[in-house]
Image 1 (cartoon, one colour):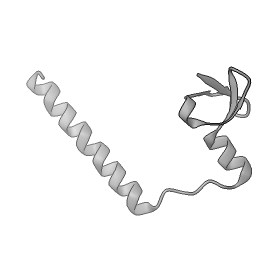
Image 2 (cartoon, one colour):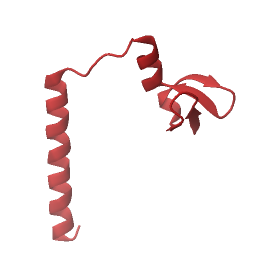
Image 3 (cartoon, helix red, strand yellow):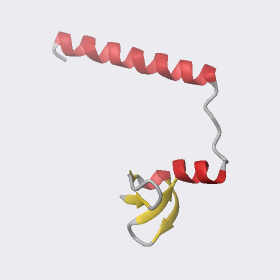
Image 4 (spheres, rainbow, N blue to C red):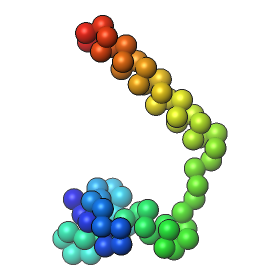
Length: 68
């Protein structure tokens, strides 16, 4: 686990852009913001993702009620 030197949040290895030593880095979010290179998620993709997550939550709640 790394800590971002800009936002100071813990960062998983797959979100590290620039490792700095063994414990610090610049995270993907901060890198995108600082370099103005981040791309917004397209609205249709965002809607599809929200719908898929809602469907998973509904299925998970149903499984809990049934005792799975």
